[in-house]
Length: 211
Image (cartoon, rainbow, N blue to C red; front, side, top):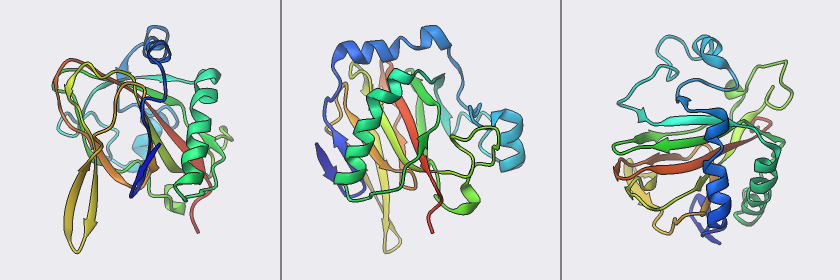
């Protein structure tokens, strides 16, 4: 385990067989546009974020394919890592549920520019009365599981701001099977993949808005 500032890293936590099993989930669910929200749907996402929201495909912001999975064994696998990171990193956020899990594929040239997964305030809460797992909750913790390392580029990086200056911190210890957990409000990116294909499993853990 390794914690630095605003993230908690489990180095090579999952074995190769488990990583391959996770990667193969796309064979069941297929790949799709990375801007379709599995909780809101594309139409509802437009209503929430407006005509200028990030629900539209924008290849200047992100270039990847995704597969949405919700197998229970996946949640059973990753939940204990979230709980341990939440406790040992000192966040101790109140976590109640998780969103559908995203299997992400970055081909050569694929990337995701700096962004935040959530703000944690009441304005950011999901309004979906038909889904008790998300209704009234916000993203509090994010997780990314690296499923392979036979590629170049595609680095996981954070942006931190102090005295109006931005510093970029690269997570250098991520190998296949590594799991990184961080508050969803922290800005981060996946730099462009230079060669090969990068696979990851991304999860968001939810709870009541911060007060």
